[in-house]
Image 1 (cartoon, protein in one colour):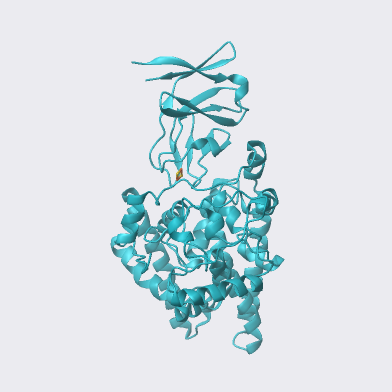
Image 2: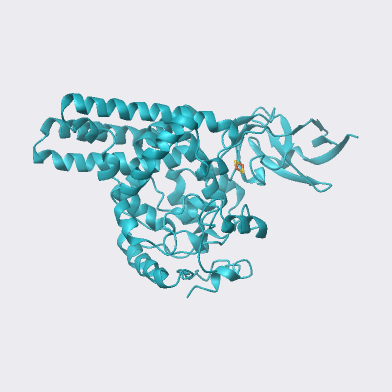
Length: 104
Length: 358
Ligand code: FES
């Protein structure tokens, strides 16, 4: 079953940056793109169990802080070794200054 | 712990996985996100400048070496060319492998491929071995890039100042890679999807070496090999000298880079050749920070790190006796004092290792 949950305020995530968001024992990453849009992915890299929240957002890429693997956070696509497995993405909507995340 | 088994397929590696020492969460100095973002920021400018200087000097020195060949007057130019070929390529391989040297991906990749060839590393294999080195730095049986195994074998260390063992190991592996892909050990860290790439890269490298040897035979001179191949031997000393200092004589099987890595302040020429990897604790703690920002990162976190060595000579004066003591006691390592401003080492995490320090 899917549900929408309130993840954070839009102002909590700087433009071209991300934050970590934990909910019901799972960890997510919420992104604010340079165009002002919001996106969400799984919070940990698919290469090893490393939180992406300490990584670097460059345009539409998130670079993992451990081995510099990169994903396109809009689609989750793995873009640079050593990541080979895509990142799970989650639908996001913005309502009244809040970022809402659809999770299973 | 007594005798160490460094095989990636051996019991020490299996034990590290069992006990959670492998793929563990490592200690990090706290740095405000805003500061860290600024330090991680990418740009092309510094690496383009350095690459023009590097390749420009290589062309100049090799040109003068060829011009003066075979007179002895060519020797200084070969020595200078050799260090850039056989040592600066190590740091270019390293930084571009991380993808942090340039902002533009194709530039990182182009310099990475050229550097991998010069330093005699398979560009596809070593990306993965280095990822493992960062996950499991100096974890015995897990890290494929441990430069000084215990007990240290000094004869081997000295031979490697001239790249001899590296090169002797490289060619059989190159041929095997070109024929059948990664070796059995390499298959433990290279994902299967990359195996064809390992083979292709090896075939290209092998073809270049065969063409160079053919040219040398045709000319009846080793001159082509002075330009391609041999500088990996006669110019290796600088990267071995700086590389030994990275972790030599320090702890293994710990999860705090302040215990197993060394920062050494160096002269400008060595820092150019080494691309600032002398800030080695900083690099391991924050591999996202490009080489040109490491001096700033050092200033930001030095309150939490052991004092750096002030020169290469001082680093060796500290490391060499520690390596010699490891001949008698494999468990011995140098445990450096932290400043009063630092967060202490987590003794509870490292009881097995810290017990042996003095
Ligand atoms: S853990 Fe993310 S790239 Fe390795």
